[in-house]
Length: 470
Ligand SMILES: [Cu+2]
Image (cartoon, rainbow, N blue to C red; front, side, top):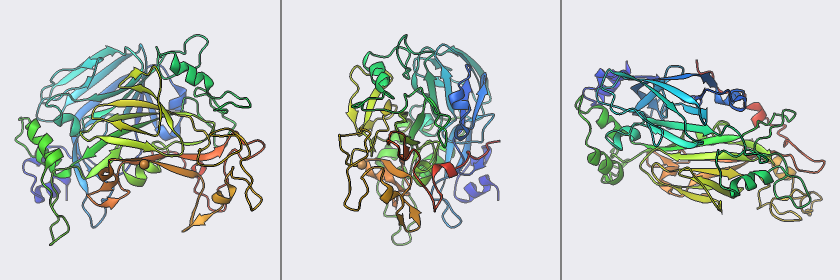
């Protein structure tokens, strides 16, 4: 049975006019425009393509969501930016480029209402008519974390899935300074990055600088470690209504917002009721939920103590999230692309619709592990009664619970807006979640750089490359 027939049988009127695309749970796609960035293109997990031009079709797709299986139909209809080189997905591919580059975007609108391609302060296609194409050429003005999206009939087109992350790296570090993610940072941010990877008896963050890799590590450590958490929420009922709406007419934006945020409660699962209301049922990071985002090495850093990383968090949806990270506090180094004068040191930060913020995760020793000299400092840990030490936590690492060995050490990042931790209104831990994993400690004197994962071998060195995308 074709997708369109499935939907018609479920009551979706008029949807057969659309071109349905089916796909499963894949890896996240990334494109690199312009200047070659080997730290990204050499990373198998990114499956990155190095291109000069982006070729998008604005189209639609049915996506199998986290709880979809043979007996539970959990698919959602999306509008998407489909790039030529990648399978259909929501969000569109991550795009990486460098400050000052020229980017060329070819866009064809294959849907039957006007759509657009928009990056605030950078490019605005204006309405592209159904069936029409447009070529955009623009110079990337500055480094930062941006959302590309369709700004028409706001917020409908963006929330329906027409969005993705547009990441701009700086051309160079300031003279005499280490690299930061910014071309013109405030003084405090290079000071912070200068302190990463500095050895010394009381150095807070010995190990590697952000711009430093270590090809001799096993597995090797890449330079410029950075991750994207693009947050979104999906409502299969409402999105299907939008897809079934009169061709050529915009779905009323206020009706969309009211349905998404305020639709009346329906007691699903009682008395045989299986319908859902128009509120979001799925909460995603880079289009994935639950273990697919928590344990995907592209979304969730797998790094050692002493290997700091940047995490860029964007909110494409309409829901407020409160991202809480465990193991390390983090520095908020930019908020809505304003590089911070005095980066705050927090473990939870609020993500508003359309907001962006960048975290520096120092990847220091988790401070809930006691050690001799204080938070994060590299030392052998405190002696334990059984003759070991509190760090490295070898006792814990060799512990097996329910067939799962506690190595690497995994800490979650979850959302304190708790409904987002579920799928379909009740399936816990299938929601918006990622984390940071500690796979070793490069600052243990004479100790363990990479935590042992024998006899059970499920560590990141066994993860392997991302699934092929072509
Ligand atoms: Cu929490």
